[in-house]
Length: 182
Image 1 (spheres, rainbow, N blue to C red):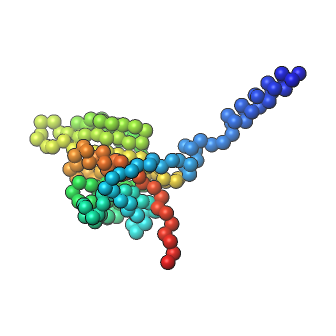
Image 2: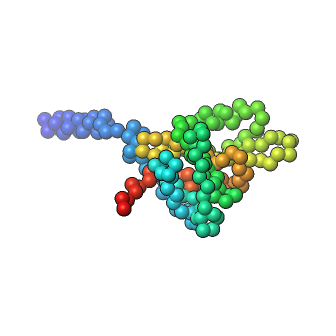
């Protein structure tokens, strides 16, 4: 009889734990922001432009003050010097759709260099045209219940090393701390 009670208790506990609770994917408030420490970068608060976010950008003292522009399409462009340019916008962060677009592009030949669940680094080239190969990245950032798409500014010409640094900076996107009342 004790064995039967023990077995019933074990089954009940397993049933309750397997059915209860929500996963992090179902509860975005529990998502963990990637912690990235970038030497030579400083935090930029984006509240002034309507985004309750912060992101790391190259230090102004060395590279110049960041130029931030809210475009007509609602994207936030952040430029620091000539080597750093990212664009942040609300979106779905659909990496599979981007991959399909790259594959079906009739002008550019694209190659995916690195890929994970939330990011993609790729190159685009026009074969036999003499046009320099373009390096790009795309990052899906989930901050709270919002999804943001972060990518390099397409008009920029960035080396592969800088694309990696910009992707690392994009991974620092997080909710801005409430501003202190003076």
